[in-house]
Image 1 (spheres, rainbow, N blue to C red):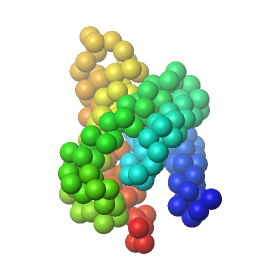
Image 2 (cartoon, rainbow, N blue to C red):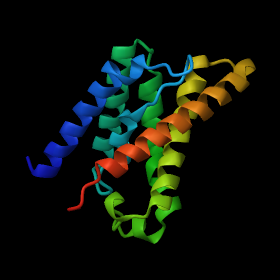
Image 3 (tube, rainbow, N blue to C red):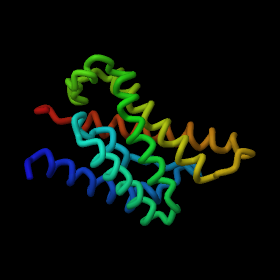
Length: 168
């Protein structure tokens, strides 16, 4: 096992622990939670085995579901963004993604923000649509998606800026 593999395993465990032990108990303004566990999916290597990535993303969401008794909505949302990630990377980074030269530690703040925003919004739309699962509550889904996304994006960007790696 190399250093990068250990880093990813550590990130997986730490993000789950922070999410289930701290962030799931925040409920800012009654219903807002930051879901930073998806940072694991955001920071996964570009050239990771796709089947492994989909499986690990599913396990990440399923673990959050087991701790939160949320019936699989996080697992589904994680699967969707794991499938969507190549599209988001191609959309934001273009040729840099095609040639697998994208390193999140080397890109500008604006591109990083667009990438994080695309991924977080996709995750939250799926998450809250499945959680509420009632089209007559579309405004509630939109409200929860918007405000939780803003909260998650701010926290995620802070984490990415504060804990960025200089060597990769």
